[in-house]
Length: 174
Image 1 (cartoon, rainbow, N blue to C red):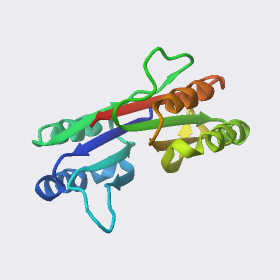
Image 2 (image 1 turned 180 degrees about the horizontal axis):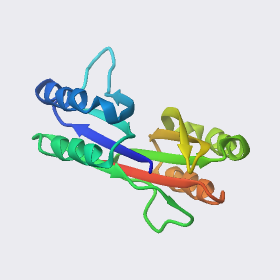
Image 3 (image 1 turned 90 degrees about the vertical axis):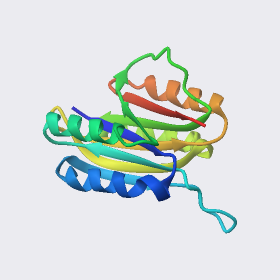
């Protein structure tokens, strides 16, 4: 099973320590972790986001998720991967994270890359992780999308046209 969890931290100064403690206590089930927040010369956002790729004992993953959900000011969403046509909207107001599970990455990876290149202007952040899916090498790609929500929908639709690709989405409202 592939499990990706998104975390929105509304006040990094207040809640980051509690989140870090939970993540440290369950570090054995965290395969990959990505954190980001807005940063410029003019400002440093107190709001932050994390994406964690969980691998390990299911009960431990569930316990970590439950512990994070108990922290005030933290919003936790799990990415559910599905194949084929999706009737859910592809974009949302706020932060949109898209996960792409690419089985047989040596065979399908080129087609996925072509689509990601086509829609590169709405991909703000990209993380690729090597994965094993049903005993075969696979790729897990996590994207933070930014810009035109119509392009998010087109990107997801193009990816879903590739047989066997599984896609998950997390939307954190603004």
